[in-house]
Amino acid sequence: MDGKTMVKSGSADGTGDSAANCPKRVSFEDALTLAKFGRFNYVLIAIAGTVLAAVMLEMLSISYVIAVAECDLELTSGQKGILGAMALAGTIAGSHLWGFLADTLGRRKVIIPTLLMTNAVSFASSMMTNFWMITICRFLTGFFICGASASIYAYLGEFHNSRDRSRAIMAASFVHSIGCPLLPGLAYIIINQSWAFTIPILDIVYRPWRLFLVICGLPGFISAIALLKFPESPKFDLNQGNVKRATETIQWIHRFNNGNAESPLQIQLILGEAEVQPSRDHSKGVKAVLELIWNQTAPLFKRPYLHKTILMCFLQFGTYITAHGMFMFFPGLLDQLVKAQEAGIDRITLCDIVYAHNPLEPSDQPTCTQSLSLATYGYSITLDIIYVLGFLVIGLLVNAVGRLAILVFVFTGCGACGVLAVLVDIPLLSMWLYILMMMSGFTVSVVSAVTVDLFPTSLRAMAVGISLMCGRIGGVFGTNLAGLLLDSQCELTFGITCSILLLCSVLSFLIPNINKKVQPDAS
Image (tube, rainbow, N blue to C red; front, side, top):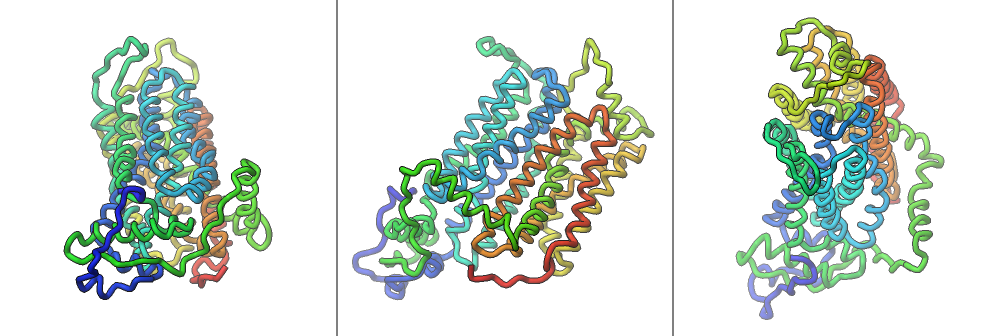
């Protein structure tokens, strides 16, 4: 139920222990505590986790499509790289816009429309017949899904007090990680079907990969419909000066959690919160927005934060080159390795397989891959399971061994595995080394956590946002690097990406006070 349709809770007689003991004027933190942690919170965590899973599906589903749609869309390897990078380019273009709108219009008013628009664009992309049309659609997919991915953490966190906020966000992240194996699972169920039919009006042959894009967009659509029944963040309402609606939202949460088991809350006023945001002069238009963005960003590129900003941005850049850029070609390369193994080829390097599959001289009758082998999906699911378990292990060990040890171990290990993947001539071993190379994505959350500690409160959100934006730029770079060089310079492609990972390992030692607990400041 949204804030406009909620009715005031509270009985006139004020009977019941809860009503009698409930203070009339409370702080926001105390109000959330009185509402309790219950059914509402679990449902919201599940929805937030589904939104995060939807972001993952929308961003990475194209990696399976470019492996099987090369003939339908007449894709070259360079075009595959561009297509794989477009969603990330869209998120880069939309990051500041959606963040600004979420802070001024509301989290819910950004999350729901952007999820619905993403679903519409995903459906449209499934009908595209050439490279440029689907490329534009994938850019718009990233542009819109960025609104939901940038706002859902704030929306979820602002429904929880300081005691429950971190565990709620971690729980939503765990729901998302459980959904990771959904991507190769859906790909196997849908893409490997052999049916096809023609839609004369659109002049397209509708194959399973087109349906796959539509199905991957459904979690976002379902999440948007579910959020229609939820109110705006009470913290946002309070900061906008709408104390009445924030109070009604807290009362609604209490009813959702407790039903008729307890008397309604009798809170009349929420006190002691952050300053109310002043109304903005919209007559200043774009200039005012650009000035606001500049004032929030410029301090990060001045002393004493400049070297920290550059360091964090480069670590995320290096991580995304492999974790996203090289991942776009992961299903296709993995499928080539699996088929070489199934063909009984015991001695051949990964790059020799790539050269054999993509001859330098064009053929009059190119071989088209319309499906992937069963083992390819099995190894992809294994990768996702390793991710789930890896995040769990890192969460348990980070305080014991320290973040520096984790960064150095992951960066060095993944870089070394990537080098060995192109040197060994055993397809099965190359396959596992390639999978281990993809584990570089573990460092994204660790670097983000370090970034939070390195910057004062007033700059932390922007610092994390800029570092992740640089990471996404790295993803675009890595995807296009692989698309342009992989077919003709396979060893060089892996050499560049692995060298950057190893450089990130060395640079990790330069992070100030990385294993020292930084006390929160008052800025």
